[in-house]
Length: 172
Image (cartoon, rainbow, N blue to C red):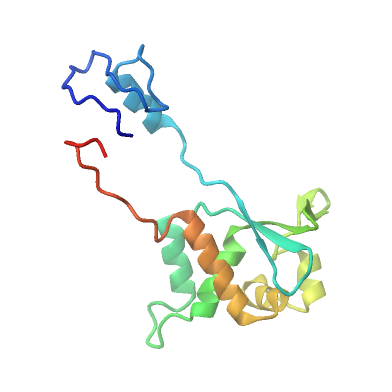
């Protein structure tokens, strides 16, 4: 956004900006800020292939809160003497963000609900009694893939994003 004109308008005055997609010349700066702050911020769901299972993908919601991350770390033993188990943590991320399992791009449903790692059918088919970590480990079959999927989900959620400083004198 390099077309900003740096003026100091009052709160009731319109701003002049030519490259901002949110710009509305009829609204004040205050109204524009209110509009932007009242929109719900949500990242789109992502689909990740299961490497060892041809045609199978899993849909995840990368909308992860700090509270969720703390809870998952705690479940993975973060505050124990032995320290956090990275595979358990990865299974928590995968299991808690899973929205659906798909075959050839079609969501698998059972009784009108999306099938996930917690579905009785999945647990039965992979021979697990618990979705996290047993069901997920059996479903993926290869532990390094589990950690790779968890990293992908976390990256898409914004953890690790670069945030750039803006120089107000240049508009960049």
